[in-house]
Image: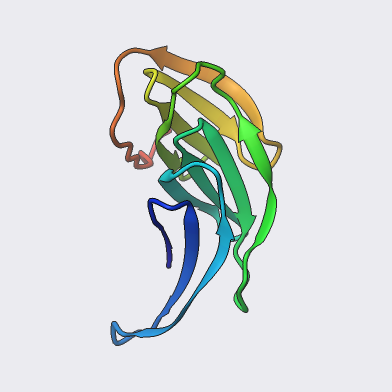
Length: 134
């Protein structure tokens, strides 16, 4: 399990099957505060922050996590990442919403924008499900 705090600290928490904590450790500090995170694939953990950046980590079974890079999709000043969710059934595709109201689909492996889905008001959360016939 991963957690963030208002100081920009990122933490790994190992949880037992019985619901207890085994260990926790800080593995990175970022300038912004993490406002959204998603395990995109078993090998890609995305964390969006208040500075509109997406931080990409490789979650290892033997901590600490390895930072793979950063993405800047939204250039508008003050546009925090509001939500991100992996789109099941579409490979490594992630929907990312910003406080500016913009919603993007991104290729998680390439770190590229596939399309902008819309521009509206602040999006607070995203969820998805796959339908049987696409």
